[in-house]
Amino acid sequence: MESSLRNRMPIPRLAAISVIPLALLGTTVTTASGSPVAKPAAAKAAFGLDATTYRDAAGTARSSTTEGFSVRTARSGETAVVDSSMASDGAISASNPHFVDLAWKTYSNKARYTVVRGDAVLAELPAGSTSFRDTTVAPGAKYQYQIVPQLVGNTTQARTFGLQVTVPAPESGQSDLATMRASATARAKAAAAATTTTLTWTTFIPQKRLDAPLVAGKPACTYGKGYSFGGDNRSFNWRSSSYRTSASAVITWKSKKVKGHTSIGTTHVYNKKTGKLKAKRTDSGSKMQVRKLGSGSGYVDIRMVTHSTNPFCSKKLPNAIDGSLQFKIRSNGNWEIRSGNHRQMPSHHIYIYNGGRVTDVYKRKAASPWCLSGSGPAGCELANLTGYTGRYK
Image (cartoon, rainbow, N blue to C red):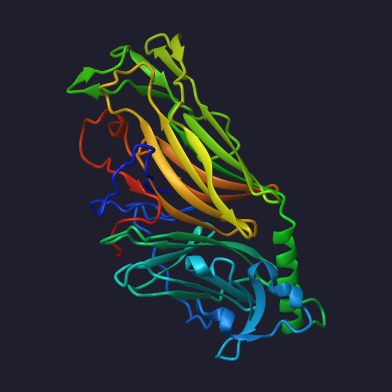
């Protein structure tokens, strides 16, 4: 995935990032050229952001209206479980055994949106689109949807939304309406019973070894020609214990307390000819940050800053791993990236751990070591976490 964050010393946002498409938030499906895979749009959604005003069909299961869940009948006559917990932020979902509707508030009439489900791009929608219907769902399935804008013009109000949806599954002899009432109640109870959730942002160098960066063809680090720096030799595996930077926010839902954890990976230098370890140092990580910005009914706002330099390199070298993020997360599994950007080296991975379930929020492969050295060809602009820049084909 690809994106950009504001730093503690704010990194300026880019209004446009050439024509290099940034990968979608969450697990991204792209073509060999890096462009999102186009999928045909499905039927028009019946449930919009105003779904909470539709006829209440909760019946006796009034508790289903808690935690933002309710059973509603749209003007079309269709009935669904509506999750309005993020309606005030600009997103909503509705599900019944046969479809899932998504609706959102666009930040610009020129913005085009991509809808992602798990690992698949479901649709690339035309400018002005504010809803989508997915009819390829399976009763009883749990899906992670992402609503990702293409960034154009003023992007200060751009948001990427992540929505967790459970498709109601009728039991033998049970009507769809009874199924939806039961589903709404179950989802509300699960959200209310949530204990802890962890949001983690890691950066890593995928290679096993990486040559020292050069500036104007000359080494900018203590060890130059004949030496290499150790990478993390890994991919996007949240279980890996190797990283350059790691920041985690552990949320306790009962108290809304947030406990932050930050860590910096040790930098190793190797003799390229013999492969032997020459030296190792660890950056202080003093600029790493995890803090709570605020909270409310069922949600917490979090700010993260990731920052680390190569301790063997000159301070004149713009080699810092840099990024910052403002993130809204809910106890029911929904989330929103409100702002953020990061330098495109190394690789970035943001994910949520919740009761043994891991949700990928964002993945972006490292662009080039030049992004740290400040030399070489162009292509190391900041990546914006609220969406992506590029052209549809």
